[in-house]
Image (cartoon, rainbow, N blue to C red):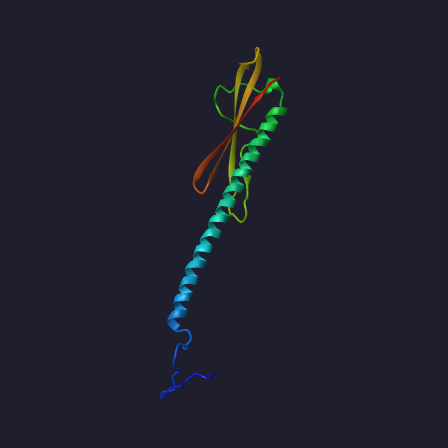
Length: 147
């Protein structure tokens, strides 16, 4: 069926098609949708990098605790609350395409304690500090070591 054409050659009825204004409104709506998706992707990437940096700090603390457990019990001297630099400090790690590495500072606090029938135990605390996005973060891991 052919549309009815009037005297001035215009199509009558609702078969006019899409106007330029409708196309522009649709493009603006799509722009806002894609901007929202882009923001969500950027937030996700930032969260993943922050988790990688934190996981590296945890791994450094685990490595230092493992090293403290392998040392002789006699060599673990009470630090009287002072945080002494660990033999593994400082450490640097690169993440993704960052220009500068993240520096991790590791220190140990060793405290003598007596528990459970006068058995001498030592508490070893390992603190890993790092700066990421101008925010100082410290992760602490504590373990008890007995002879």
